[in-house]
Image (cartoon, rainbow, N blue to C red; front, side, top):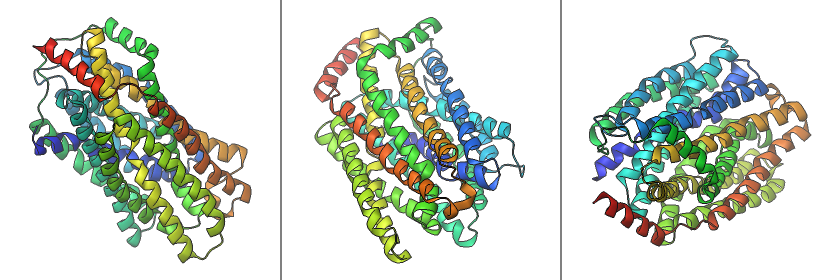
Length: 449
């Protein structure tokens, strides 16, 4: 593929991340506080929406593997996901009612995540075809992550500008929704037009085999190791996102700077992506991903120690300190997950050799199914613990008890430290490297000939 084709394919992830990232940062607090659903109820609804969506992943993977079209294995699924994506974006970000019910919020989330599922699994399965080489796959999927970061950068930049004129959360959420609604059709049409697809006109597997393939993946130790690492990383990253606005307001007492500091966080993550990509190409994917986890742990520990020295400072010095922490922590954000996606594609190639057919859709649906558990728990667990155990009330802000404030800080810091530590161990002990994949690719090439 030429550069424009690569950009066209990876731009599909721009819209997905532009709509997905604000769910944790802006949408959950918006529905909990501004729209009056409450913190614990929003956490439960979010978990149920994600849990229900989890059940669709194996089906989506089966459909992608089983039903190609005359356009290939992937394009028609991307096309079908776009209108669902647009409808859900409108419902979630631009609610036409002043006091949406829990059923409304659940329905919107279910539609949104169903569209995410269909689009994301298709994109990742597509990458296995578009980039068959070990290092080329890293380059393509890190470029895809760059597009995700640009999407996040855009939807952080929008609230940062909007809050200058209207600091309300409603204005920020509405502006993000309008932006995403514009991006979806434009980027989808361009990707479908420019990106090549595998030429498959017939059904590749039957339903029984597809579900059997999915079940057997639970006994694949290599895949389970990588997927477990992905679940842990997704959990701690999403937990930080779900608590970020609360952490900035209640613990750091800098709510007016939250959007701008988050913007800096994602700008820095772009530079981090380049470093982790370079390290991966010079060493291996699993080593680079593991190092990024260790780096995140180190920054969190430094941040924890530093907090006790800056918590009573004036706004200016405190802002400088918190901003420095966010800059260094943001450097780790883009490291592990795109490399794990590339590692999963390598394992999918190995399974293609072992099973005798391409089941990349099923493999990536397995990854996304379990990873979504981490995403789902990241909101419901801290929200419920804070509200039910520590009596935290989001509407009180800094007037909450000192113990509940410290609970936020400890959860924000130590849960990711534990999760990253386990994930790093799992990544460092992964066994499929560059030389192993070259042998697998050689077998696949010989089979194709």
